[in-house]
Every structure is written in structure tokens, then in C-alpha cells.
Image 1 (spheres, rainbow, N blue to C red):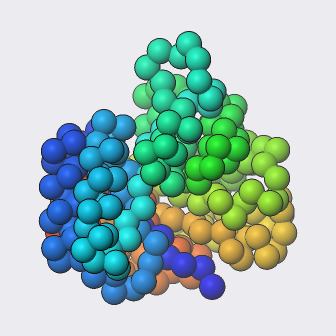
Image 2 (image 1 turned 180 degrees about the vertical axis):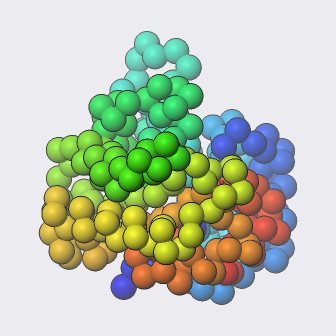
Length: 256
Ligand code: 13P
């Protein structure tokens, strides 16, 4: 049985005060109706405040269990890499997950598959669980090449990753044309791609691994459409941007 996993990617939103208030607000009305894995991925500058606020709320309410993810790492452990953050530094803050290969990093910051693969390896080697993002542009979809393109990203992202490590990896299928645009892939289209990703994992590893890997959908997920997405058999969760930065919306998402 795969445990559903909903994560909020806050992107470059919520400073440390706002982030801390978010956790306070969330805990006031918190219910984990579906008993799922829940994470928020704040900016680096807000991680410590989120961790402290979440710890405090957990002392009051043992059921308040929100994991923390980061939005990026650099693959080196330490050294002369001005402006970068390592997996070790994040783990020391209580971070458990890290988003790697988000399309905004691929497109705006020119991260290629090779760099993304190095980051995945570094995350795994240093105790963080990567959320590997993949997905096609509208142009690629219109050419009928969406599946081929996305599966190639899976292939390169997981290059030389040992079968024993796969249990710590989540895949997020995020078609670029659906991110922040209000256009969601139809649940059927998202399902089709997530099923192809699962088959690819079976080919690369084995059936049992494919059956257990968590595959999220991301791209304009909101309280009004999450339940139809979560009904799809190969979609195990959501990676949510815009709708994850308001505590009420996030609450509605996790209680889909
Ligand atoms: P939106 O939910 O704002 O479309 O963003 C999706 C996303 O990029 C999550 O990583």
C-alpha cells in the first residue's frame, strides 16, 4: 500500500515570520483526516522558523506531524561554493525532503539532467529524500513527445541510483504548461503519464519497486480539483505551489 503524500512547494514566498504564522494557523485547525504524509517546502531562510514552530505545535498536539522539505541543494558537502547550501546543512535543520529538478530550476537556472542526477545522489548519500520533478513543455506535448521526453528525464535523473535507494525517492510529474497557469492536466492525462513513469521504474528496477514508489502530480492543483486527481490509481499525491501558501487552502488540500 502506497501512503499518499502531499507536499507544498512554497517557492520564493513566505518570509520567516509569515512561515511561522502559517504553521501556527495550520495547527489550530489541523486534522490529518486521510492519515497521509504531509510536507511543506519553505525558502531556505524560513526553514528554521518552520521547524521551530512545527516542533512547538507537536508538543501540544502529537498528531501534528508536518515534514519539512527544501527546494534545492548543491551536490558538494562543503567548501568554496558561494551562495550554495548542502544536504548536511539542511539535515541539521531537521529537513527530510528536497525538491530536485523542478522545472523552474531547469528552465530559469539552466540545470541540466547531469547536475540534477548529481544532486539526487548527494541528497541520498547525505540522508535527504529527493522529490525528483519531471515533465514536458506544451510544445513537446503538442508534438506527441511528452511520454518519451518525461521518461528520458527519469532515466537521466536516476542514472546509477542503486535499487536499495529507490524507496527514498518520490517522483513528481509536473507538466510545465500546467504550473502556475491555472491549466491542470486532466486527471486521465496525468494518470496516463504517472502510469508510464511507474512502468519505466519497473523496467529500470523491478515490479515491487515500481509498485511502491510514490508518484505525485503537480500543476495547478487546488482544493477544488485535488480529489479527482487523487482518485487516479497511479497518482499517489500532489506537489502544490500556489495553493499551498495559504493555511486554509493547504488544510483543504490535505483533507481532500
Ligand atoms: P502550482 O501549483 O502553482 O501550479 O505550482 C506547481 C509546482 O510547481 C509545484 O512544484
